[in-house]
Image (cartoon, rainbow, N blue to C red; front, side, top):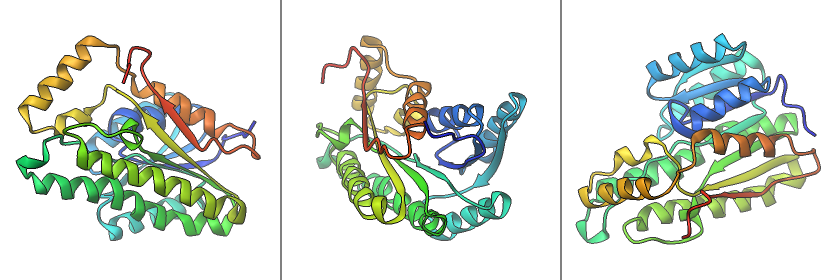
Length: 249
């Protein structure tokens, strides 16, 4: 089993949901966590909670759509702890709508955050992992990275992109640089992701869905990430497809 005690983990989208839960879980396991997002007040509160339980957290004000912001955040982390051992690319948005509503600003926002944000952070962290010849990169895809759903067409496109990127990244850096890559593919999770839905009909559908089944919690996904982190060094858990028991689609 891989010991993550003392390892340095950078988590984007850490101000709520899966990111916040994973930061808390990794910190409790002994990792030094860097919690990155734009909502710094939320990050400061999370840092306080982690510290109360004996954990180590550093707050990083980061906009993953801005390469300069990402680079500055990673450099701050490396100055503080000397390395980056775990990267969790978790920042994402999901404003659902039909294509013929032409909410093109939302389309571009999803591409900028979900896809380019992951590219930006990976590009900033990867040189450090290559230098130390070790590391573990997690990317948050989705069930929408395996299947396509009406109303989620652009979102599905971004998540399919992350699934492909994760697999290609694993093939390119695994053997050559001793870096593991894991693609997390959650089903329905109770997070703030749905708050970005501006289409009233789809927002209502999500609310109705939440009343019909028990959604996963951020902690459930955090547990799967910890599992993959702790896998023996010769094991790369390449994909984790995690669904509520009641989710039949």
